Length: 606
Image 1 (cartoon, one colour):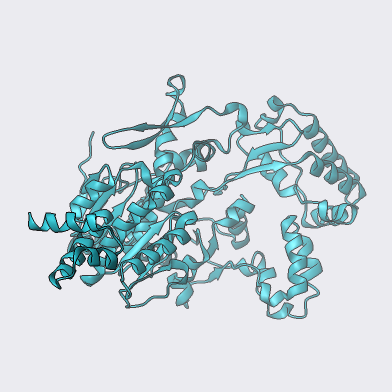
Image 2 (image 1 turned 180 degrees about the vertical axis):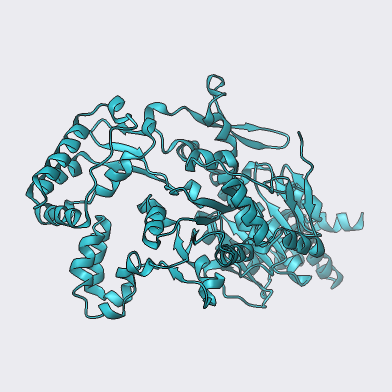
């Protein structure tokens, strides 16, 4: 059955949509389907809805714990419960260690413990002896401070370090009905692969022998680690054989202390990794040629309901990367600002390997357009691949000087402060998220393209799999219009990798582009967007496409630089001729040949 796309465009329609899809509606989806994706685009109201869902989930008694996890700290800082804490809901914000409070020496010591996953020892040796311990929130925020909390805010990076982070929060808060909210799909693209080195296993054996834990516990750990060292791949992939012995906090502390004393800075705590190994995807475990062990450690959601807000992901990606089947109630909706024009330049000259040699003509076109828009009272945001941002800024400012445009300046987005000055043109890079300072801009132009390599594509799909399970993933190209496709060979076309290869490519490439241009809110306001991709539009449609720069130039009535230069030269010759200067005098004054002067005058006379 083909679903009809529902277009949400215009202020009234958007307001009605937001009203019709309130927090209560979203929570009902969660109760009925457990795991839900809300794939609204940037500016539609995800953040506001997320805040309302968080509040309603607790006040209604639907859930007794809500864990909100975001890709950046800045997004947490903007949340309603952080800026205006409620009096009737217990909230905690899991924050980074306050390095300025630690001081230089303690911070350096802490960094060494953190690098070796030895937070237990860091708290004992650094925190307990710290003169500012009484005023520091950090040591207790993962323990007693969680007791009784109803809403927990944390960065998604916690899941890369500890796949059991959600389970830990649930246990410490003594919660049963838990809703985990992920803001954006970065959580499904992170690298969750782990490697336990052979050296670290031998070190743990020696540390356990030296420790004061019981003989029974020593024997259990020694047997487990001995089997791990000797096991071939087929034994490692036994789903039920590798549960690591349960250790008390005191036992773990004793073992880690001995390891630190025995081996110093070469000792890393692998106990958490061993615990994760026992519950990892068995078929993806593998022993590397040097004896190291590689395995996936995807986040464990601990039986919680999961609500994910993202307009740039695909259900098959979420299933493969997180192992979760999501329900998506908004798949047949398209959001577009009333009056928004979305143009796309489907040309390969914007790719990294081609950009710099084509930059003079590319930047000339976009600068002409930028100047025109500024002169008509519009604000312009430019986007570039990160490696080319500085190059673009320098080149554009040089072009402005050459064209005697003295009242416009191109600046780096990182140095841009919100301003009403139309003549400041910021350049941001692909990959930015959660920045709202450009939402009032009228235009957004991509100066080059954003693409990934076949290796990045393959690793993003199969990064959690054993090497002998991987199949080749390639990027194919088609024309009219130019498009890039993630593909596998014919013999693998019925595999799960084949199903996700192209969606992953579009997510990695066009999803990143949409996040960048989404800073100006084209899905909810009238905007002019020009992307530079050999990809289909994601979550919207192109109003017009161009296969080369000349077509784009003609669409806007822009003259090539050579033509403008020629016209300017002709105007100067005519002006000097009108002053009755001889052809030789005109040639000398303009630095050209007398023959050129005669040609221009002849063309004028004709």
